[in-house]
Amino acid sequence: MPSIQMISAAGITAMDTSGNPTTLGQTSQGEGSHLGSITLDSAADFQEVALEDTAGRPDYFEDSEAQTLSGETTIDGTTYSAGTNVEAEYRITLQDSGGNNYFAWAVEVEDGDGTGYENVVGLTFEGGSVPPRGEELEVVANTDLFNLPGDNTRELKYSDGVPCFTAGTQILTPGGPRPVEDLAPGDLVVTRDAGPQPIRWAGRVEVDAARLRNDPALRPVRIAAHAFGPGRPARDLRLSQQHRLLVAGPWVPLYFGHDQVLCAAVHMVNGRTVRLDRAERRVVYHHFLCDAHQVVYADGLEAESFLPGDVGLNGVPVAARDELLRLFPELSAAPEVPAFEAARPILRWHEAALLA
Image (cartoon, rainbow, N blue to C red; front, side):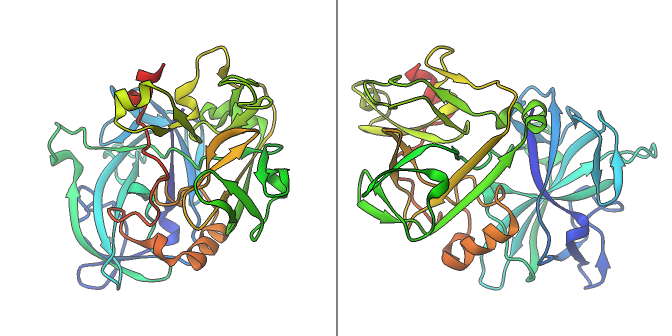
């Protein structure tokens, strides 16, 4: 079940091309040409909207009628029933005072009045790059997705979510393994490439059993003890599906031209030693950020530290995101200039399939 992370219209101040207050859509929602600027309110947080997607490319949010709300959903005080159609209506390019560009997609929900898809309820952001809050952002370009090449199939990949360790994972530090939930900014962790490195930020997300049932993409991947060799991992290890592991072996340079690559845990599921954990229980995810993207040791298995600018900051709460941006102002850079370089090349799902 896919989902999108969006800031709802109530958290956005929109001005038209003449500088007058306007809405995100309703009268001219087709391409967003009526918009002159928008401002994200300082307290605006992301809302997760869960979807059913029967499109030919179900991994993507599209300008089509193939996506519907998976359950009753309330947005800005209006409740929409399960099965309500949702579309990506237009794409706008926003520019801040420093000349950085951000790309926002309008989320449109059928309003039920029989006149079509007229209720633009919020914006989601391409590439995980979120504009600064409280700053007026100029709309410098706009596009009607229907008119783009691809016969109305212009698309945005659903958020992958923030990759995380589960509580209890033992992270190697200079003093020995420590539970990930005990680590805090300033603590040192052992990295494969740079030795002991300090943690600059640590985050925590709790997912209850009901949410796991409703959103299977949040279920962890369980890697059996010794799945990749003695002590790798030393015991059963659970990670979020998008958390990447270091992969090496004689076939890696043959396929990819690199000695080592990073591969999402979900792409390594084989139904035996690596499988989805379908237990109905609460999961607490943790992650941490270093001064650079690192490969660390989790229960003896090489795994990544947090990589901002990849999945972006959409998946963390406002307070945590603001803390990250205070520590690392460069995270607000344009998406085509990533703030952090990945520690190793990252495999896409079809590339990972070669390793299977």
